Image 1 (cartoon, rainbow, N blue to C red):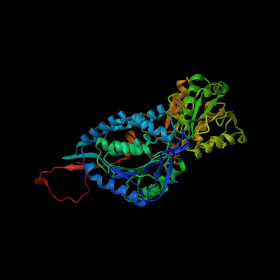
Image 2: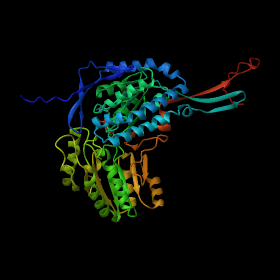
Image 3: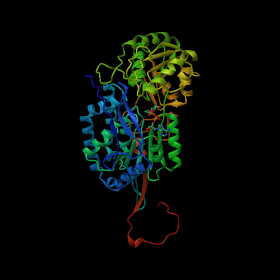
Image 4: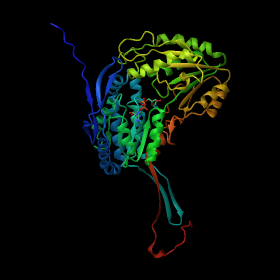
Length: 503
Ligand code: NAD
């Protein structure tokens, strides 16, 4: 008898609107893969304009009651959300591994960093404290208050399917807004997991909604007259488009784009430490991090020793299925993305770069793997330098002086993260002063700010003027009002047509 081979189950991934799963009637959908096996595991619904509107209407309906909920009750709920996410972080991490491909420990790290933002939001009563001036004028007090915007939306990338949405929904909800999330269609299940967890924690229906989809859903969000603000994280061309379209439709917008992060290594640096950092920050999450180090700028005579130290470490990086506890680096998110990344390695010699370690060699047949790759002699005019490759490809560029190194970083169109490795405090301080980037590491390769600072880059890495989470996140999701107040004695009342003056 012939053996029957069971086809892998493909799960339908619907929207979450008004506190429940809602299937799309668009007839349009997209495949979701397990990048480690290359097999399709899900089929995600793509929203119609009407379905996006249904989510906005659910959020609009929920807004008045949520806005009126006291800060004490909001804080209590955030503590419950914090506990639930913490208890169930391994469940979330597994979802991330199975759809994104990153290794389990890295996925747990993602959830933990997102959790820090939720913890920050537990302090919302303190965060929304305002100013009060007694007796600004005789018998007159002045105070400021911050109020929510209404319905706000988040559009998120594939590379942090749990954490980046947490950067947005946590401060947005804590400030009293209601929320519509449009997650990446490549790994959408974490957002449904979040929606169910928030409901379990006690969040009222309609306060948090998820619409699955592609450009149709994004455009419907950007053009919707009842969405007050849009947060976006993704690649630079889409970030620019989102910012221009959202602001043209009268919305507040913060749109974080791509990156090309340089790590400068000075001749006095501890070479072993710099090599450990370059390998960790270059190949962690298969280089699919907007804060990944992608270019090493080796200054003076450090280049040869540093290259040898990195080359020595690469074969020890264990590449494999993210659910295997011994794996340190997983596959890339899709076959197309893996092939695009590999094309930079293919083209590097033609551009004049040297392929020191070729990650296309020795990859498993199954899944979307590419091994750690090292290029040397990379120059700014090459595509391997200029483009955000977003894969496990580390490039070395060689310069003679610190000044030349800083000029390279400052001439990059991006300005997300950057780092310097040195033992000289004076030079490090000068670097912090000189460099044009939003997040700077001094002997720290991935300087993602803690939750009580804010995250964001400069130049083509951020469109808009507010960074995400931390104090700027609270600022983004609220608007200010100043109240001038008087409780006059009716006996002193009179008509006075002059412009109000302080007395
Ligand atoms: P992406 O720009 O392709 O997609 C981001 C979002 O935009 C997704 O929800 C997607 O559905 C939507 N989208 C894609 N194409 C669109 C189009 N033509 N019109 C309208 N919407 C569209 O980004 P990605 O590949 O999912 O994520 C990787 C990128 O995100 C990298 O460039 C990375 O640097 C960047 N990123 C930046 C940060 C940051 O903080 N600056 C953080 C994480 C990721």
